[in-house]
Length: 526
Image 1 (cartoon, rainbow, N blue to C red):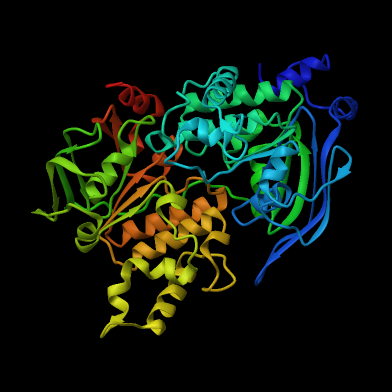
Image 2: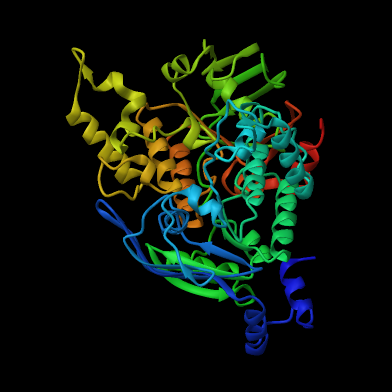
């Protein structure tokens, strides 16, 4: 049963009927406020991240939190969860004031958070990650039996099919995400924060997640759901709060909201088009030729295609189809077994990323936190790190040139930051992505490989990324772009390759195809 449908049925209202004031009041009485955040303020050097933000979350409900990247959504939740210490304001949980000093204290007191960027012990197995910091013991010795049984019980409850003894690093991102959700549930939390939970999930996995969320809501758990995917928000949530520039903008029941209203509240203006005009000129000249490409350690096999100068070439497929493996093998990050790669008709030797960069290739990875950013370094170092040879004279780095190039990147990518010395880890996900894109542009690549370039980015920032991609294509660069969002591929790309089971299932003209045709090809070798 749909969330809003369940809510309406419980009140004896017709499905799809608009809320009345009476409806609202009855529902609110049945779902009392369990978490109250009042006038929360948080500042970092040079920027006020939160400016008097208030939020009320009700038991047995899903409260969506929306806003552009940098609006303060994750910062607000980190103040709740004990990751950050708020500068001012009050947090009431079950009517009592709280100030969690760390995430462990928050978890032990009934507040859990599933972070957008997973931070897991990848060399340990699943059950180690579930019970880290609270291992069950017998006579002072960790009981692996209890860990296994406890993990299995949670997985069975949530219908998660994962072996508790599997090492985390061997699992795809989607499965690791479900493990993190199971960990939050295992604490029997009263409030669970989901920060962009579907950014790496397939449609089938999203349905599974929604089933879990509905189950938690039925058990009177309060859910705070952060997402940029408006169709999901309108489907799963009961109330929606919109933030902008660190401030509260509005809180509405979901029945009173639609996509256009949410966008206007988020960006402060009408956004009539989701995608910029597709006016890049695809030239006859073939810039990239890939023939018979197979991976040594992946299931990628016998992939052949070409890409033209000035073309935006999409890569579609289901999770595990080999999309990421294709880009990583071209870039030399994953080991090639067979196949040739040609640039402007000449075969190029690419056995590692260093050779790829030397030959004019750049790769924007899917997991920016794990393989993209250098979290402990500032924006300048993150921007210039792939291009250090150009700043070195007689073994000495030119700080002047690094500063100038970083300033160019900040302006060209429209990066929101106090200054170049700001740690990249303090930026929003969208701004981190722009820093990485600027980094690669400084290497002056001919072939840009983009793996989920707008993952976890809001609608306004997405449009800016699309504009940048289009502009790069107009400059004659060749773009290969993996995306799990079909409308994005259709709206941005000229042509789309469809991967299935590690093989190329076909290619389609983005302007003369449909989602149904792409999905049919995606299932060809499954």
